[in-house]
Structures are given as C-alpha cells and as structure tokens.
Image (cartoon, rainbow, N blue to C red; front, side):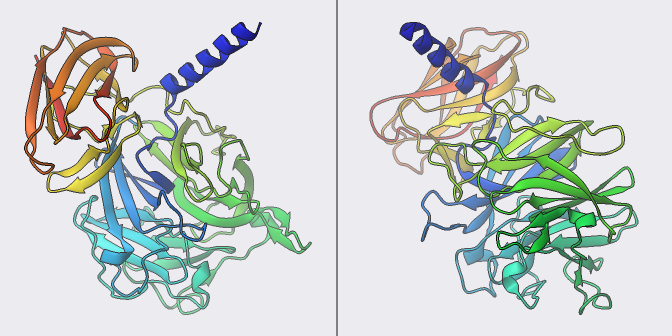
Length: 456
C-alpha cells in the first residue's frame, strides 16, 4: 500500500509539472497584472516583487512588460520603467506599485503609483517604451498620498477617458484628451470621491465592528456591451475579488458579488485584470505559488472564462493548468526570442545590448514553448548564445524527458558579451508539439541564450 501511495504521489507531481501553466511568468515575481489589447497583441504590464524583500515588506523598484498572441507563450520585454530612472520628481527607489498602460492616438500612457507619493503618468511611442515623464510631478496628488494607489484607466466610446484608483475608498478623475491632465471643474479640484455604500460595494464590517463596504483596493475599470464594470480586491486581508456594475462611467454602482474567493496558494493580496481577446474572455490575477513565493513575492496567473448571458461574471476558481488551448501555433522557422516562454524552471532573464535574453542557466534547467507547428519537419536548429563555460541544449518534444530531437552544443564564445550562432542537425519531427529546451552541463552557470530558429 505504501508503495502504491508513493507511486500515485509521484505521478501527481509529474502531472502537475507537465500541465502547469500558472503562474504564467516564472522568471520573476510579478504582481498586479494589467493586460492591454492593442494591434492584435496582448501586452501585460506588471509590478515586480524583488526576490529579496527589505524590512519584510513590498520591495518593488520597476514595472515589467510581457506580450503574447496565443495566450500561452509570453515574450519578456524586460523592465519598461523604474522609479530610479524614469520618475524624476520622486526621491525614492522603492514603492513601484500596481500599474496600467493604455494607448491613445499612437501614444502609450503608463499610469504608475508610487507608494506614499501619489500617481504619475509616463508616455512612450511604443508599448515597450522607453517611457518618459512629461509632467515632472504627480498627476494625482490628493490630501492622503498613501491612498493614491492602483490607477485604472479606460477610454469610453465617445472618446472620454476616466481614471479610477484608491485604497480604502475609490476616487476618479475625468481625464483630458492629452491623457496627462484632468478636468478640474468637477468634484474637489477635479477629484471625485465615490459614495462608498453597501448597495454599490457590498456590506462588510471591520475588525473593530465599524460598518464598511467590501471594497478594499485594486480597481479595474472597463466597459462591455454598454455595461460598465469595476473589479476590485474585496473583503479586507486576505483579499477576494469582487465587482460592481453601472450603466454610467460615474455610477451609481451596483454590487454584484465575488468573482474569486479565497483559495490555497493565493497571496494575502489579489489584483485582477479582465480583457476580451480573439473572441475569448480572460481573467488575470496573482498568487504566491512559485518556489520561495509569498505575500511579498507574488506571481501572475490567468484563467479563461465566459460571461453569463445577463453580463454577470461567474465564480472563477484558480487553477495550476490555466489556459488549456493555444489560440495559434508558433512558427519555429522564424526567429523566436529565447525569452518567449510558456513554462520555465531555474532561469532568469536580463536586458543587454542584444535586448532581453535568458540567463542564469544551470544544469537541469529548462524552457517550454507550447504548440509549436513543425509542419512536415525540420532538419536544422540554430541558437544564438554567449558563453565562457559552455554546455548543451537538449531539444525535446512533448515533455522534459520526451523524445530527443537533437543536441546543440554551446562552446566558449570568447567572452560573456560575445554572441555567436550554434547549429545542429535535428531528427525530423512533424506536426504540432510542445517544445522543450533542456540545459545540460557542469556545475555553475552555463551560457546565455538570446534566440533560436529551426530550418527545413
């Protein structure tokens, strides 16, 4: 019986590793996911929890960007903005909290809160940055800067843009067309405090017995089929995800209930983002499921869902499996960045003269790329890498220990900043497979990996 139990347990561990898709980013701790659909691509902006915390609290210096067109393989574009480099007016390094980006007239506006210092806006000509600050000061600077967190921005069908934010209540401004200023004629110098009543945000009670609503923080504002949605962290700490709806961008809001309740491996905070993309609806959130994860080291996750016929959102259960089906197959005969990843173990990414690349590669680490269409088969593989130590890339399909297609040896390139192309013949594999790059070598870091391509 004990042997049977051990075998079953081992199978569960293997099955979990093979099928896991959540968290969708494994190379960094990422939180507060803010997806943006633009030009047929999903761009995902996140905050970034450092591996090592300071004073056992949120330690967050920059904001990161990832993109996908298939919802299973995510390309890492690195840190697109940081407090130290891109927010000139604030004299602090830590506190880069939940972010959101939105496009208007070919410009990209990144709304960034700085813990205890207000909300700023950065602007770029590309979704990847570089983002620059046009104001040299806060966009929002209210009476209580601590409350000025978690901005969410939406442009309505009539062209009017709105920004909501706040903890423990919610506020909004009516943004001007330039997206870097707002109408000062409404509310208190342009800032409108939303009426926090149970009808709008649900009824709750604080630990001291004081009545309050379920709303806590992390609003996500959007419109679908003429109905406005406000998604938010609810129920205090630990947080659930609730939502309210309205027929107007300014309310009154009607509380609709919880979307995601408390489950194992969720962190004590949660922060949601919702999009429709290629006919599907997706719910982003974060948990603490990665190795060494925790309340201050969180990880972005993703689930697909369907709205109810009346527009309400069903209860969503967090899963390890995440997205089951890729929206499109990856073409291996085009250059693919090594940092385009469905799942990884052990590695990190960094930015350098070649852009973003995969690094911290050790023996036994691997990358997984889902739904790769080899068509009638490949004959050759090439990888661009740099190395002093050297190692090998085992090319496998369908599993980490799946069929071995080929082995590409990476030798000393003459320096850590010298990139070279390495090639190998591969066994002919046809059709659609998950692709695995398993890294093999001696102890220590083996090499850096920039991009790869197969040829017929």
